Length: 144
Image (tube, rainbow, N blue to C red):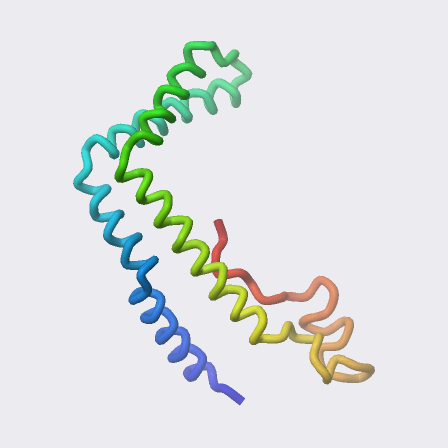
């Protein structure tokens, strides 16, 4: 049986491997590039401000004007046309796919408590046990 420390050591190794993966390196590179790309930062700021203004209008029941929608579309176009932001979006997709694969590998390697061979009548973690209906399962790595 694995100890907590062995699991934590293995997790650190996985973290280091992920950091060395091309998807993580590309993501890191583009995040640094974004910090120096004033045009991309301005496009993001403009878009976020307009989106916030529209959300505030929705929350207070005020009408969203055609001009508000037009500005949002204009800012969306600026986001789409910015090369740094386009590359960052692609890098994010690649990185999230890597994380999904890691999550799937963990899910497939670690049975949910209460579903294994000991889950039968009188077995640990049966229907009312920690992995039974309503019990905790394996939580995903990616939460948003």
